[in-house]
Image (cartoon, rainbow, N blue to C red; front, side, top):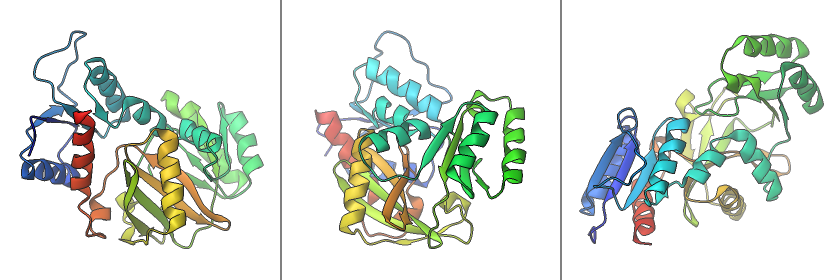
Amino acid sequence: MSNGLTLGLFLTIVRPEEKAILAAAERRGVPVVRFDDREVTFGLERPDGLPSVLLNRSVSHTRSVYAGRCFEHYGVPTVNAPDVLELAGDKVRTSLRLQERGVPTPRTVVALSAEAARKAIDSIGYPAVLKPAIGSWGRLLAKVDTAEDAEQILEHKEALASPIHSVFYVQEYVEKPGRDLRAFVVGEEVVAAMFRRSESWRTNSARGAVAEAAPLTPELRETSLRAADAVGGGVLAVDLMEGKGGLVVHEVNPTPEFKALQGTTDVDVAERIVDYALRQGRR
C-alpha cells in the first residue's frame, strides 16, 4: 500500500527499466508522477503537486544533477541524491574518492592538456585506457597500445570543441579474463551481480556483452559496498574487474540500467529500487 506516498519519476524515455519500476509501483498502489526531463521547468518557489520522493532516471548527467538540486531545494528527497549523482557521474571525482577511502581501483592519472596527457600515458605505460571524465555505455573510450596510437587519439580530442575533451582521464589497462563484473547495490545491500563477457576489451552490455549471473562472494560484497558508500550510497551499479591482486573498482554508475542484470537473477531489481525509494520518502 502507498500509505499516502507518491513516487516521482524523472526520466528521458521509458526504457524496460522504467517500465519495471512503474509496474512495481502499480503493484503497491503507489501513485507515480512523471517528469519528462525535456519539458519540465523549475521555478525558485516550491510548486504544488510534488511527490513524496523522486527517483531520478534521466539519461543525462547534467539534467540529473540540476533537477536533483531543484527538487532538493523544494524539500523532496531524491534517489539518488544530487551529491551522489554529481560525484559518481564524474570519473575523475570518483577515482579520487575511491582512493581516499582505500577502495582498490586501477592506477589513474588526470591531465588537463594534450601535452600533459602524453606524459600521463607514458607514466601509466602501454597499453592504457583513455576515457572521457563524464559518460557511459563505453562511449568515447580508447585503448592506447602505442605512442603512435596516443598521438592520433590526442590530436583528435584536441580538435573536438567540447570542454569535456580538454580533461584527459588515463587509466591503466587491467588484463581481465574476457569479462568484468557489475554489482547492483541498493542501500546497504548488494542485491545481485553479473559477469559481462565479451571478445572486445569493452565489456559493456550496451555494446553487446553477454550477461550471466555472478556469485555474491564476500570479496565482491565488501568491495562493492565500500565503493557505494564512498560516493554517498543509494541505488548504484559498481563496475569491477578481476585484477591479479583481486577485485578493483573502475566505475560507479549513479543512474544504472538493469535490464541485462534482471535476466540473470530471480531478484526483482525494480521492486528493490521502489522499496528503497519509498523508505526515503517516509523519513
